[in-house]
Image 1 (spheres, one colour):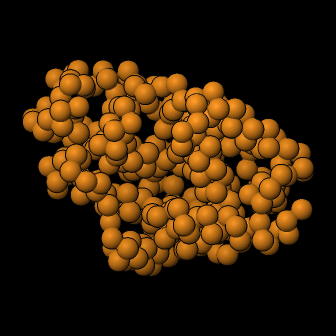
Image 2 (image 1 turned 120 degrees about the vertical axis):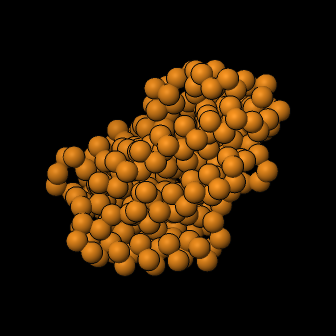
Length: 291
């Protein structure tokens, strides 16, 4: 079996290579919690990688079944491979429920069979699985006492995933995926043909503004998580919230033009957000600005 230190280091390297926004936020955590968060990220990356590439849908489904099996083995103390070795140790330490990891796998599975969402409630389930479940894993690592923290962590995860969806409209179109709720597209008079044609009009701007405001409302709810966390832990979700809120700001300032290149922040901007939000987190009940 790979030494535990090496298993954790492999998860850290995966996170540093792939995590982008997340890695900056994770740096604010104490070392022991940070390495556990790296494991959670590496698990999610492992699930995503299992369904990327040219494998058939059946092959991808089989890969996810293999992950479920190895997850079960890790929880039974029989980990296989570096990431699951670190995961088995981490969940013993922080007691993250297996169901949260199962939910992440279920969310990734949805992408194998579903490329349209009729209502926001359908989309919400997807967002819960691929983002809020991860937030709940992280919450166990952060540590909390009030159960209300779980609801706030769920909302923060939903807000972040909705931001991803708005940012990645073009990228998803290229893969024949539309995450914007079909019902709401019809309500705003913006058809799938309009979306495929990259039409920018009042209907498109209204639809996108509606989605942005929904995300902002969830960020406002998620910000109420911070007082439930210790001073050393709250900076991590606070930084993430600020990074994603900056992306929403950029989407708004672009006139909701999500078709001409991915909207993102520079490394310098990310570091500045990390530093300023980290300092604010030490204030009593420090919360990110969600205005």
